[in-house]
Length: 295
Image 1 (cartoon, one colour):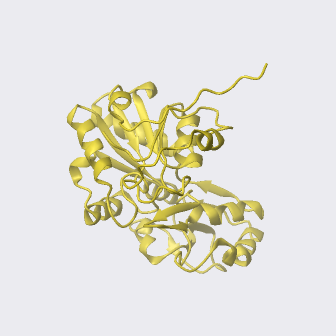
Image 2 (tube, helix red, strand yellow):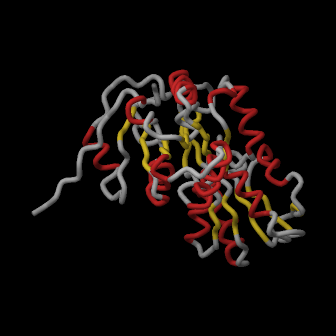
Image 3 (cartoon, helix red, strand yellow):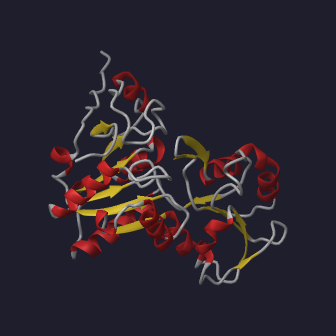
């Protein structure tokens, strides 16, 4: 007899489900803002959860260390009281770089990500001189595609250079557009034989760091069953939470549901068939799906 997986409920409010947890791990890009503007209902939701005694850690695959991400949030209009702390791929990348003291590093990514290296004892060099590659994205994600890097990545892989991927995302929403991220380049690198260490979701180290942060804020260890992940990435936020053993809620941004643009704009109902297809092979399905995070 064929067993049918239970339907993922579509919810319009996180309050009833989310208020039973002590901490939320909330993705930033696609849930809290779209790179151009904040989502007011998401900000109101995290503030309401905090007001009820909950802890909110924003968990991001941004290659920027936390101070830069927090400054970006302020510029976009996300207030400091919408969260307790941030944990980013940039933070983890710096931890990994500290293990390569004195190394010559080739930075594959835009200049805006250079704060990754500040205060770390490494030297930035050319691809020919490098002992290690740190990939934070495309040099110009407005005009380039991952295929533009096929030759460079093949040459680096042939030299057996290890790569630290400072943003495992493949795509992210920027306004009404999808742009490529470092994860798309890392996938090519792995495909041509390169060795990649992923500093971010869906891999366990960033979740471990997030739970350490939650524990520090709470003043005690918090069990995994008291933590809820909220995110829009099927293969990052939701898969990562499942692998780490924590519950999750899926926010159907334009990353996977193109009819919704801008997180706060979509009022059209989620398609249950589409959700079933998205999570057909998930080992742990989200507890619910939302058009946008809202209290």
